[in-house]
Image (cartoon, rainbow, N blue to C red; front, side):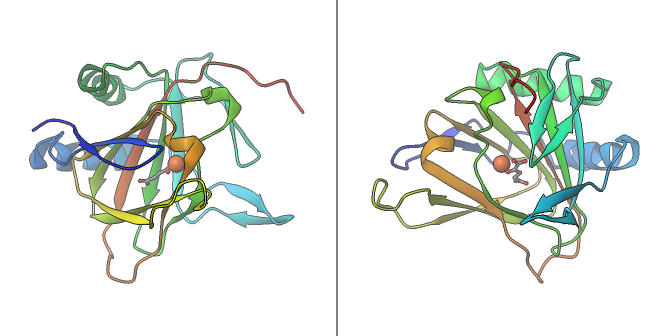
Length: 203
Ligand SMILES: O=C(O)CCC(=O)C(=O)O
Ligand SMILES: [Fe+2]
């Protein structure tokens, strides 16, 4: 299959549910789970240090330093598997990426809160390419301002091997999240390929 457009106001969302064949997705899930140096990072939330409800890793070109929820992330080098996946993602999206954020949701109790990938390092209209492996989870999107973008929240089922592309004004006009669910016990691994274009001055 190929990428097809999900029509939404003030967003450009494309989904290919069959970007990777099921066997290839399972093989990649097993390899990345075992070989990526996963971290369990603390973030500051309302002035308190709390552990993120997921494991993370950040790989990319040496120049692609990135700040995320108060964390300064220096990328780990590309592995062969990540380079190969980046190449495939670049081919089908026609975009370029110099880094990838990996999130490992160990069970349905792991999650990600409402946010936009709108860090200044990504520029004003970033292209974010999101590959999912393992358990199917609901990916939610809602307008940042329902008066400016009158549309109800939506939910996409991101299955193993799927590719979701967010581009255009998606990060300006919409927020996204991966809520907890009691229905899932199996792990899900998500990779978001990004292009870090600018370095923020240290503050
Ligand atoms: O796990 C997902 O599908 C979303 C991940 C995400 O939004 C992010 O890494 O910024
Ligand atoms: Fe995100």
